[in-house]
Length: 210
Image: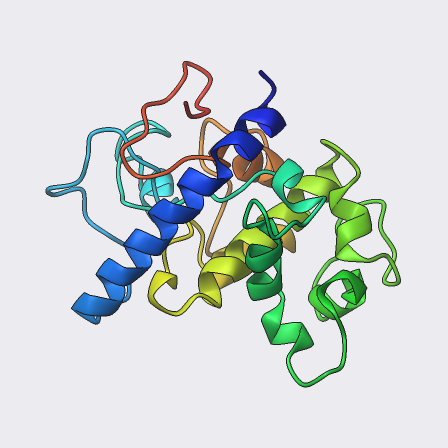
């Protein structure tokens, strides 16, 4: 089964898990910090970027973070599998009060003030780019959608394995504070290999999750 098929088949379960997590965080009134310690954390879990860089274990050890959905989840948003709700939430900061729908949001809208993904122009929509299966630009846009889904989801804020500051620094090639951790070839590889990872997952030998 391909990653896209696996992702689509498990979306309902993932979304349920997210909802449960959201209820838990809302009840506790907590927002997960960007930097967490290793104490009392699962042995196998998605690791936050800060701990990846600090060298606290392999890519599969560490913190209670989410790796997000694959580009296959986003490229055909549907109400039936939860992907429509997720992408609407992810882009709500760009559509609320603007009259734009999620499928009209462009690269220029989302990446204003930052480096555009490779092989894209400002007039390209995020949907058109995320449909360019497996390309670097596709993965970066999927990473953007994952990041802002968690940013815009209230009690889930801070659960994506990169913060907004970290995402934009790596996207823009600014390595003064953050860098791609050892074990990943580049920013795109970092996003892609963490997709689908959830707290408690074990990892494959190549650092991807199952």
